Length: 285
Image (cartoon, rainbow, N blue to C red; front, side):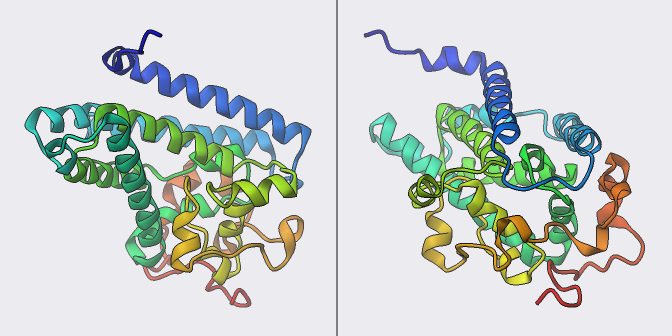
């Protein structure tokens, strides 16, 4: 059986990532139409155009600030022999599993910091100010948060020495899982119970978007569920149930707050204190 040339995959890395994104997005969006978990409260036309508009905005800005993509940076680190994995002679598949696991743990830790550090939360709250929860929520991030996230990725790539192929697989997996676990899809409960033992499901992560502070500060994972299950940040179900739970932030209620221009300015509004925490509005404890 002929093996796939890793270098050939790297040459078409942008096409692979875009193709995977379009396929998973289309699949989950279709399932949302067939098996919706919750009714939506805001115009899908407005939310989708704004949330996808954020994707174009931070993609362009990230390329201007950081011209080298994570996969390219991993190749540069390999050339410089940077990182622990570049100094061992493990089989490639073991190196990839180790690298992907470490990178996923790093993203989980970054997510916690985004909730604990006041200045970081100011940026991350754009993700939580979505008043609905569907496939586009998984791509709704402020451009400055994306740039910080890329910097953290670059750091962990340099430390671990993750191979370009491992980074490519992780980027595709992370983007795909963000779409999957933000989907407004009703999975069979038995299937959800099985899947969430390993990966983050829509019902698993939706709890994290609750206005109740205990629930907002839980279920931080995007890919592997082991981190929340192991370190005590797991909440199985929302107190009010998935159909009745309240999503979003009370400080940014209203249809106009779902516009692209409003989302870009949310972290910097006059009167928004840097110490604001999710769920600290009256009655959300």
